[in-house]
Image 1 (spheres, rainbow, N blue to C red):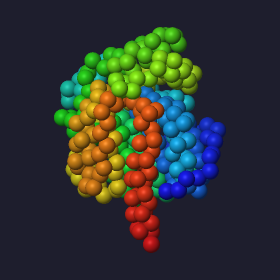
Image 2 (cartoon, rainbow, N blue to C red):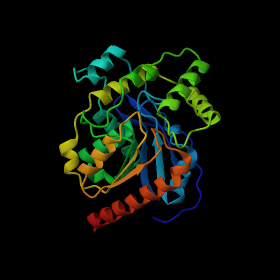
Image 3 (cartoon, rainbow, N blue to C red):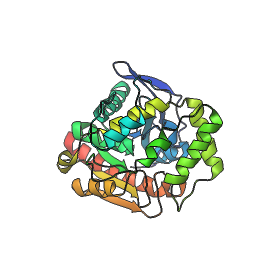
Image 4 (tube, rainbow, N blue to C red):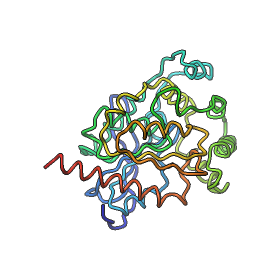
Length: 310
């Protein structure tokens, strides 16, 4: 990869990714650069991939694409009530009927690439987004030049677990902006990076931006049920040959580090980057290291992609 000219982000646009599903998306960088798709996690709109982080990637020659998953932000919001009891039963392995699945979210992302006329891309997913990214790489390896799985897991129930007490916090009912901001500060205080704390002013600014995009607690619950009923990808990951990077914080309370370790163990030739003091967020002081690792992995993927096309 080579550094490209500074590029501002595009306006927010809308793509039909699947029947009845429209995704709001945005791009950074030169459309002629290496395409890189960013997939956010549970309840997170695309703006949780901070603009400066996207700009760092674009400056390294990537054409960066970020988007709101279905049931989040300005993308299509669906229907279907999910209660804490439903989530608890699914967590215990007692089943559940999700409104959609992790493979459905993967199909959405592929539909966005189709809309953009992109045959393959470097795919970076965080948390739930990592599960989606892994699923894309497994189901359509021809469309994934490289894979980066951040603070995620394999779908195997014995690894990457989270404490069920977090469910009630994630689903806390809020009726106004200040209630949402308070709940967000409480959550990030629990799951954020202890060695890289985000200032309260920044948490508030992000919370305000998220609130203004639209907060859908029922949508977050539907995404959570998709996570809890996801298939075990262990055997498919063993067969994956896509150049892969796995990043995980050693202080992650939301997705235990065992999920990252297991992902890296399963995918042959993958690079594992474990970060002391990092929780379930992307601290700004670590962005240069993450961008360098993503670029390193993408370089391997670009070489493999070029060789396959020759």
